[in-house]
Image 1 (cartoon, helix red, strand yellow):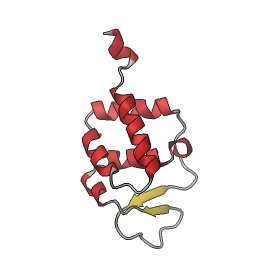
Image 2: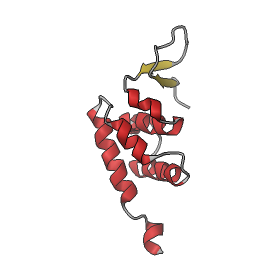
Image 3: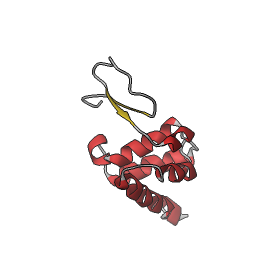
Image 4: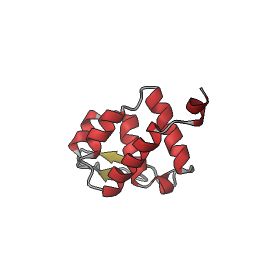
Length: 109
């Protein structure tokens, strides 16, 4: 568990929520995303600070959710265009490239 839980919203930041760090995101395209997809964008902001895994672990976790249809890459790519942080857009490009690369299991088939 994180030391301080974090929440991202496109709505006005709630007040009086103790012990929670709330971030306001102004990207209206996020309204088209589900929770898992928003989580991917948030992880891409600073995955090395918000996860306990490597980049390969992030890729594997997202791949599992794409295959399980919890994450729609086309929606993520569309929404990423509205992200103000260039790092998120660059990491999403890296993520898509990694997801499109054949995995060891796929190559063995």
